[in-house]
Length: 512
Image (cartoon, rainbow, N blue to C red; front, side):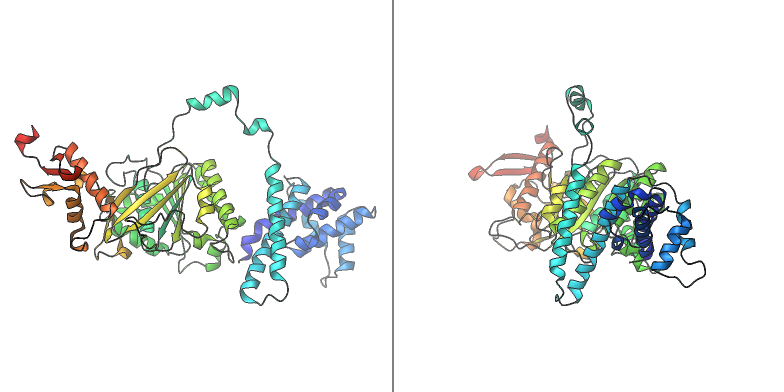
């Protein structure tokens, strides 16, 4: 990791040393929370320890006294020795946090660095030095620190609601309902799908819609134009742009990307970028703070991000961390939800799961909670959405959403198309039951009466073997089309044998 990734930690250590220079009586308390070995800059650790020694001995803490003591304990060959480094502390800005809180933060940073190093050692070296035991101790210390920080907090009045304040919540406007396959404004959403299902293409399709201020497909409301951040540490911006260019040929916003691409910001690997710069953007504490700063600066500049897509969870995990870690999933998911609520964007995290095998029934298993670490991520997400393959129908995707923000949307089938009819080159999304895009004359002959099951078989085309029973998704699609056509007056529905619903085309006389 580049040195710049830790610059804020060194800045914190510098300010602490400067504060101790001004208030040496606090040095012992600070070092009890964070010993000199915690300091990322060892010089600053030595300076803090020297200030503490002089204060305990009753010696006046001056630039000369500290420099002389340091030169005696850790000689430097140049003529001025330590005096230049110590003198710089006098001009440092005043520390905003308390000395104790700053020292605790420095200690936490040291534990996080050690945890990362221990994961690296366990992956590359034999565990003959007790790395696993040390790692358990470090993780327990970090968990204890998190519990202490969570308990500190605000007085009850600041975070609770009662009386008039509680009643006033009823006067707030209702939030937008959660919609299938769309991000949730002001909250963190999790999208789970197997590889090559189309979740990246769907996120780009949605992002382009928001950037242009158009509805992504018929049947849903357009949202106002807004800036979109695509945070993809694995896929190059060049490739993202090419994918959007392909999507634009079929997108409601049109093929002229230059009209709205100024609202799209892509972060990813490029031949002109140092790879270490992207490593610093992984979601350890530093990477999350960087994302927070970008979102906050955009809002202050009057150009807030309306939507943020993070593609994908595996690519933003800190080095050495596993997708199976519930602790990391809880930490990252909670951080993203807090930032979405605080700053207002819809933050959507894409996550892989394995391709599930069909169970004994007619439906595929629910993949929303099949991703590695997905249960812990789902606990922090306000909406969990799956994008699922449909057996025997490569051009269909089933979307299911669970949410605690209100009624969950009904499962929806989406249609995807491509020039090669392969999942790798998805270029089109639309609700598969959109009657405005379907003509019943394509499936029914004049005077013919067919059941919903027969319509499902015709929707399957050649992909369904003779006499095979249509899958549940095809039956639901057929029923949706039947009802949409009936309401539009395009077909007449009547009872049939064994309670089947039969449909036939409407002629002008019947329609009246």
